Length: 602
Image 1 (cartoon, rainbow, N blue to C red):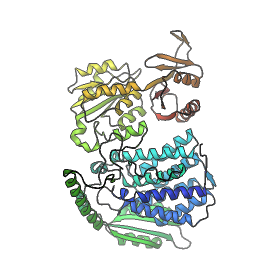
Image 2: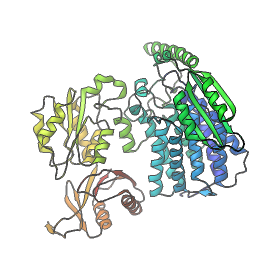
Image 3: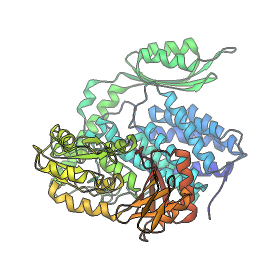
Image 4: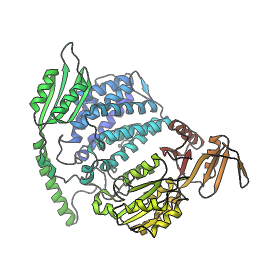
């Protein structure tokens, strides 16, 4: 049965479960710090922050959701430690703002609160960096919004949120080169994921949090062995100065200017975080002159909870510990392995397991590391350049999707704008690669693609995909450890394993077989069977076409393009979900011309 709402007591207890789950994984999160950490231990800092939030909420009778959320926010701000802790406190602050005046909240309220939390967290950071906890909360909130618009079920929406957070964490190495080089995911993002997992476990009534004993988000399907804690110890020698943190409250009759404080600290140091409002601000900054930072704070008001730590000393301690750990790990591997079975290395969970991801989450987790061409991040520059993928895409959204999956070159074009053999050839010849896989993504481009094989300076294999959805499915089947010839059959098979439909409007009257089509009617085309539905009412045409597909599919993906917008497509998604409640419906911006929707069923 769907859970529609949650009260203040439920919010507090779900947060308690979230804190418990993070505490259970604190060593895992600590191990993910990329190089000798400028903030101490990320996991420990986050635990201290959320524990302070929970303690504050525990001193408040449950009451409404707004009171509990406000207490969590205040406690987190007062107890925030480190970058990750301060950002977590700002996420909680935004959530409290999103839940203001509410005694209960539903799935849409949760999605809205997460969105406000995202905005608040980004605003608190002087120079936001993607590939961090900020990216994870943003992607999680976006997924929550989409899910809540489809289904007003708290457990379902939180499950989607957790899945999206996991996918976002898995993709962090593609956004931050230092993570990719170290073979780890972002520690703060992983900590946030563990918090969300704990809250989900509470909603499900499970004794064991969903993340406990399971692989973490740093291990994507097909991404290779689990990443070990970072061994990039040389960066520690650069030095980091001091980490200075304090809480400042204004003197009576005065107020704090948060933006001005953030700007001034940006002139003094780096890694600036300023969280709070005119009544009180938590400051975090790295600089060589903590005295200047404290002097500024004293000029603003009354200081408390002051902390000044040498980041150089922290770096030295971590460097020495990691060097010893790395040496032991190498000896152990050469000698047959060391360590306890199931030991978490790099925070990505038990070796040999992989998280369950949606098709797009898995694609992003796998493909995001293919920055030049398909390959895992750990494979190195030579492997990345050995095999490149070129894809034809019509529409900004589809082009962005392929680019995010690591496609080396995008050739724009499609229906009514087919790229020439020369254009395909130019894209391939410009690559630095040993061989190329070409995805035409349109039946009218396949012939031109075949011509390229004999003309290109590089060996080219064509995977004869007929639309962008088939192209995505083909990419999921790509094995970067194999050569192009060895990939073609499996990728083609994967492309044909999904069923696709194209939805558009008739531009003239016509008769196709026994069907009469009038100008303006909605028509739906199948790459194999041609016209499968026609109707003056778009929803009837689409549902009629879906009914013609082979049974057994569980996921419908709607790529919306020319003539459609997000609101309309979300309405179509709800319509499909109502028609077949067992289906998962995913909405993606494709931007393709001429076709309102490209539909994939799998």
